[in-house]
Image (cartoon, rainbow, N blue to C red; front, side, top):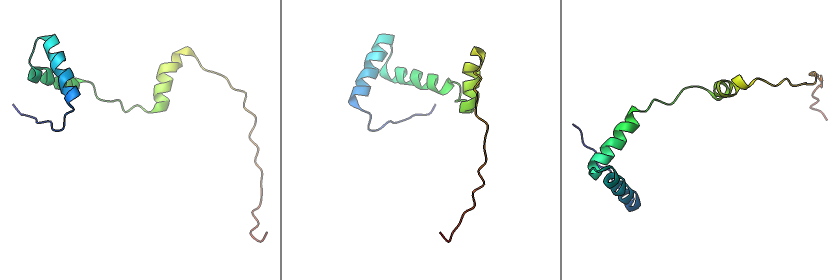
Length: 82
């Protein structure tokens, strides 16, 4: 088994962890082990991009048809002598 030392831990955080540990009926050390084990076992962050996420979430709700004006191309010459 490995060990881990956490330096510069805010006293407020440490106090909250002690209270949480007492609430669960275990030592502070065991509580921190449990928190770290749960965090390590969470599924990894998805590599899904924002567009795919929107499509997945909002796709079942249907889409919106927008009336877009036609594109126009303005052929403007660039004059450097002006």
